[in-house]
Image (cartoon, rainbow, N blue to C red; front, side, top):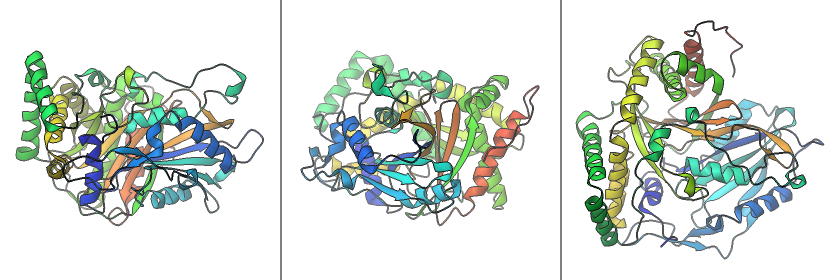
Length: 476
């Protein structure tokens, strides 16, 4: 049972099968200082370390029993008898000068290619040639294997909490997310969905039993589902130039800020760090539409914000444990302070609503359908009528981590793009810094760098609203 692909995990495979432009891999780049003695680790050392770490995760040496989903049953995770670490961990080098522009260009090319479904669905590349002697581990993992929060657990298996962990008895690194850096943390304690079962009849029976035993939960889920359907079928997300047919080519841009900056904005203006993140993104998206000569939709753009449903007992549990919220971004509002206040009010309302349970219920209902019918339902959960773009904020460790004795300096996250979604934004916090990784369709987003610059300007605009704020040098 545990080795069978769940309906939610299968969704990300189905999205790829339906549209060639939808590549459902997540991941990012971990950028390190040079080794203590200079240089970068040998490939064999990286491979050996990963084999030791990922030994705790059997699925990383397993493949799907069938490369396609559909038919009358879900594929299973089965051991790959031809598993070869060389197929999953290999080297690459950036051309000089190895700066941010070259890293973004290389990452865009890397994430433009789907993973081979006949092999375990992950890759890690040791990238040399970064400026100042730095190097990177760039990870690509299929979304059916792990979600954003789960990928942080995997990341920490690969890293150490000190330069020389063998010199002490310190356990493998763990962290407790700061509530301010976790999107919708109060919702992580929402009722958990029922365990997946292979037979639709068993799932339906369990759903009926849960409804009988927890009528209040069932009512909340029903209300949430009704509201979700109203948003989808009656209101709908607006049509914009961000929602066009896309190809497989990807572009990447990076924006940097500090956790303290975003916290200051949130606290001073009556919201949270997460509200500040959404407000900065709203500012950037507004400027992008205006630069294109496009009137910002009066009702705003709608962002799909993943909600973490994992609890403390699910560390290192693979697969997907997420629901979604849909947040209206007031891009038509010209005043930064008003935009922030509107976003903060919206998120407060959503936190107390039944929408997370409704989205979760929709996924469960879709999971009751046999695989041959599930694809159409899965695509509807990622349709442009439901949202214009994804904005995900994943909390990372707030202390330094190391690999092979070298300090991890930055994590650049990558979020996949569903069909007809030309841009997505992932935010990752690590050691006091926030990194916005903006992924975009290569063909339809030639102005990606303009969006990145406008998001940074949006942060600076919010900072300027704070009392006693002294401007600092703008980051790239």
